Image (cartoon, rainbow over all chains, first blue to last red; front, side, top):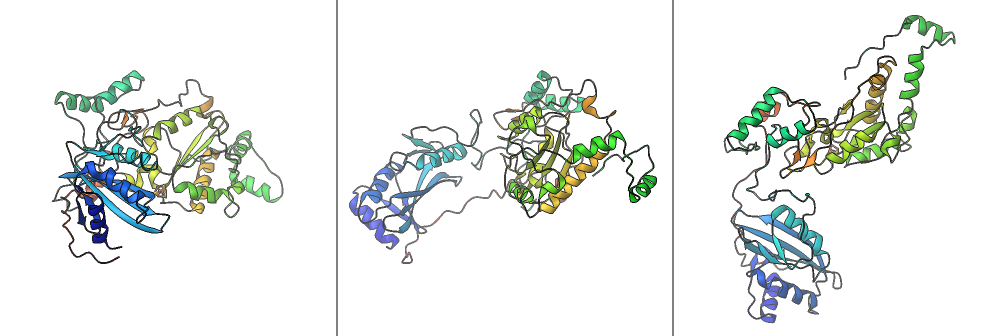
Length: 194
Length: 237
Ligand code: SF4
């Protein structure tokens, strides 16, 4: 089936839903409509998209995106690719975990690394990183720590464990703390040609 | 790899000559080290792709049993040799240090592959530890991605040479006040706390990566992503 045929089928079956074709995939314009579209694709005898292969997050700087790949095991067709775009400051997308059980871990992963909030998810916790990790490391504005320079909390930890700390390292950490800075990994610049 | 020379009281030349005639002279040290190096018990765990090569080394074709290190133990209490085969993520590193602490003396560590040594291809990642030698001492570094089974056997032979060079009277695990238990790092808000243990490891003074690539860390190309335009004429599927 042609991508524009899929689009017109969805739009005629679900009044009020508008989808846009973006390079061979369908962009659901309003994130709130996602569950309706997916339910339709899953239940309608024409599509029978009974398998959700992947949920992916992506950061496009202006917005965050979640991408879904749907396949049909019954009809041996697919994939249909759906996209949803949300604002960075309010990344809320309805969860598909109630429609496809397999979406649960994949949405947790996207939440863990991109900070996309899947609404009505049964158990939205971090998956790979530990509880207490700050920030979402795959977002493009994430600031990574410099792993060569010890900071004040490292020094404190080492002192608590009775490990001798060389004076230069202690001094460096103290200076950083006084300036209120974190030791961050340098980002590549244009000049470095990367 | 540097190791101290085996200083034996008996001249090696005389020893060899006698050995040809079927007479073997050994010191207690020789027997002791021969016994130890010929039966290393590695700990049974693998962390990433390098583990596949380690498994291959343990199988019939390369047969690590020829070198006496075939008895992979699932418990650190029964093992004295740790092959760190693969990527050490920050989430995994505290567990490795804990396992190292639980091993009985004398214990040896071999890091297998670029990842375990320095982070390898993932060195710039937020999630991968830049080398397990930040927290525990390492006896043999074995570079490669992954090292072939022959290389692992070579690394094992190097370790055996190191064991041969140790002496009963001087070996550290019979000394008083030996501390070979290292504090286990904790999960922090941005990575592990501490970032390294200065007792074991210190950053290099000259930053080789900076010299070679012009900057200490390359976190990938961060340009603006192109906006995807609407495709009006979709090709039929
Ligand atoms: S060094 Fe290479 S083969 Fe070994 S774990 Fe790392 S990526 Fe895998």
